[in-house]
Length: 297
Image (cartoon, rainbow, N blue to C red; front, side, top):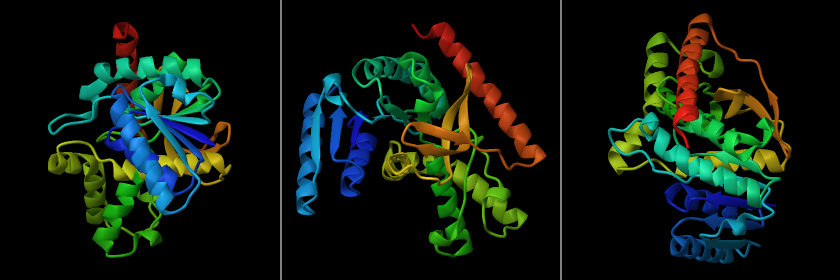
């Protein structure tokens, strides 16, 4: 399997490293506008593979031709969030980057599956789908698995238990309106505990941005690797990812993935209030997509 990553910054390089060390694929291509950065990180990752004597080929550069014959292309290119910014603040700027990237993926890796990581995530999934021309089943976004991991983290801390004993899935938009539902957490929570977990999960990314000055990268990378493993292995595992729901909407859902991409979108398990919150959030996503339709050249 060959996996390519567009953007060799913190997130992209962390994905490539984790992918290589877990042996998800034999070939990795790192593409970045800064060719030297991509080449240097490719060399470093390949040398790390030599420590463990694994079979790994990693190349880097600024030429999109490097992604030829990729099974999966991960898009991380774009500006990361800075302190004080919301994910939506990056909308038009990053949409231009994702548009160009999607067009190049269609040119050089027309049979690949696209996994989008660039923020604002749900709208960037739509952008990648729109400008790649790919089937909806072959364009998905990493967000729900990251948000779910943060939910497990917060639950483990609050309940003082091992995260391995916690099952938690977060659905909806990758923003502060994500749906953290008690129905999708396998722990008994009182109202106060649920409120705390919801708040801490929703602000999990912002807390890291405030401390670090930029977005998180290790946990997002791990979530991408998990998705790639599910695709490679035809996994039957339920994952939370962003998908294309209509011509003007992309948002997080519970799904199953297979080698050809999206296999199944599962029914949601939400109460009436959460369903209303999700609908409101999706209306905002649709408004952002309509804005891009009018302003993205």
